[in-house]
Image 1 (tube, one colour):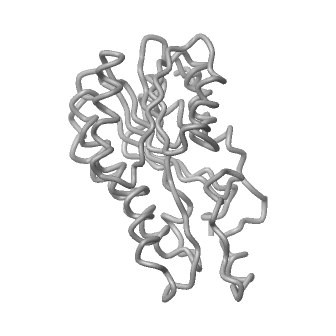
Image 2: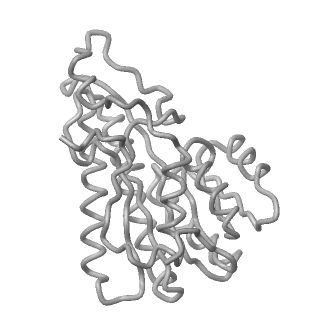
Length: 251
């Protein structure tokens, strides 16, 4: 089995494509020959990502995925433009750090909406097309799906939910020609950290428990795995969550 993704003739939707892991994944899929529908709430940065891609058909779709009504139109737009859909990469995410009792309801709602509800709705809308194309879904979870992380309760809840959503869908579609997987990165230097901010009186030894001894994970390493899982070369994977966290969840 080749581990080099080949997406020639195939179309992928990538959310969170304006920066960080979403941008890196878009560039990797473009290298593999994919036609791309790139989605983000940050329109200017999204255009920057589009400008970085040459030789690939690219559709830019500006959308706020915190709005549930904005999700299905992403898939409609991609299929209308390209005539097919072969991969859905749910990468968009937000994190807001706070003491549990201080989490603002608006931040809790935003976290669940972007990190869990949006992937759910995008998967629902995409599934008929992915069954037809024998395509793939790749959800981006986190090491926070596996371990408790102080000051990140809403984020942990959203990513654990996304992990089990992935596995539940994989079981339901066990006999269908679609592959459903996830990746779980550790900390990366991406734009998700914007507005993150730990509480001023945070206990740093608690944060150190999920910071990892080997430093941050390289974004490109995670993007490579997403591209593999999204491509036909990832055919052996179904219902898997690949931990890419430099050992954070090892013990």
